Length: 319
Length: 287
View 1 (cartoon, helix red, strand yellow):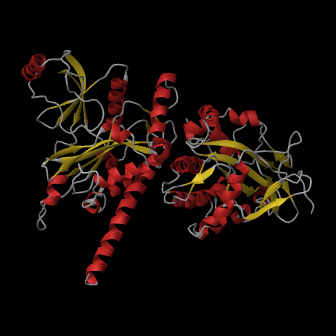
View 2: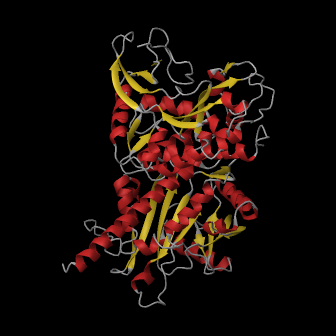
């Protein structure tokens, strides 16, 4: 698609709708509205517009949000892990195909200035009963090729704000999907490191591990709260859902004194195109994967603690 | 040494068509024939590793049968057998249930043929939907003064509601062979719910599984056993002596630094089913 058409589409998006809509900067996985493809858009008021895809997945996701938003059985403290939905709206689509229904969500990254983001698909299988043979085969192939079967989760994508370059570094999609257990471990360490992500020879220093993963409001604490809920909730089965981890990378390095801004690490569940009713059974697929993911995070924190202890004792011994 | 076929096998291999089956002696030992195609070897390897593994916490060992090595036994064509603790030796009228744990029974290292076979069975049973499936059970029926065992076919076709019903039946005192009667779950609180009951034991196992990266218990079962006779006699709750044991280690692999998320997910789901029964003992099926 040539640049003249692209300019034309952008002009139409900006002029036809009252909002300024643009392609979100921080998508790490899923469809991306680039080169005239259909994908999500954001406005300048913290809203995220997700096009309702064909083949009923979009409708399905909208139905989930509708149910979830009004479901009294969802405990209040769990709602923070889900994006807020504002229904659907007709919006000029990113591929120039005209006004299409879009799901209107709060943009979970809009409150950050330079967020580091990672998308992790949770569960030891992404397929479920009653899907087509084709879909089942596609899913299980991917599940077996990635860490889904072996670890109960797979990293779908991530990006880090690189301070040295003052720009974002994005992990290569093909590499990410080819991760084995060690690759996933390394990615989780890289995600909270301050040394250059572009240099593959550097051992990630996990400089931000305690602040982002640890602490009373860190990622681990949030995951444990989610785990407690998943041990008993039989409302929904979150097939093929992702956990998004977000934190403000910029502020940690600028930290000086007690009033410095925090990492504000957040866990969000996203992508509900394949959610089904729980029917009285817990989401054991998601829960198993979540527990495995929690162990990976715990291991990183423990290794960082050990390293810090060793460093301290070395200092104390005058070395 | 007096050896005979065990009375209460609820699942797994039995002596059939000239193939050796398990045996028990009168000294509390259980003799399991080594299965062909390396499965027997894997099971032996597991027991040997487990018995000497210092990373296994002491309080977790009670959930595993005690291992007494291997032995060639008369009448089994000199084939070696795994010698284990007979888990039912201390019971007079045990009710037993075998539950295969995990949302899948296959694992990536298995052959493609095996994986396909397992997948088919998993999707056709409650393994995929509930994270576990009931392989077999036997209950002591006081009215008949005999043991009642359902047909294996019946169990294979069980759906989630059926599994729930079966778990209630397991702890009921009213007639089991009558399909129409609602199980009374009379023993639920003494078997599932007491302070040393099934639920407490499962929760202790769950805590271990959240952290242990030693073994992946593919295709393993949880055996639930209790003494049915004493409860009706009106003795203390403790006399039901409910026990949880892990059995069948022919497909156990190294954990390699990863928790057994497959077993754990299924275990959590199973725990929820037991909890539901304890919370609502008078319902025969959740809607």
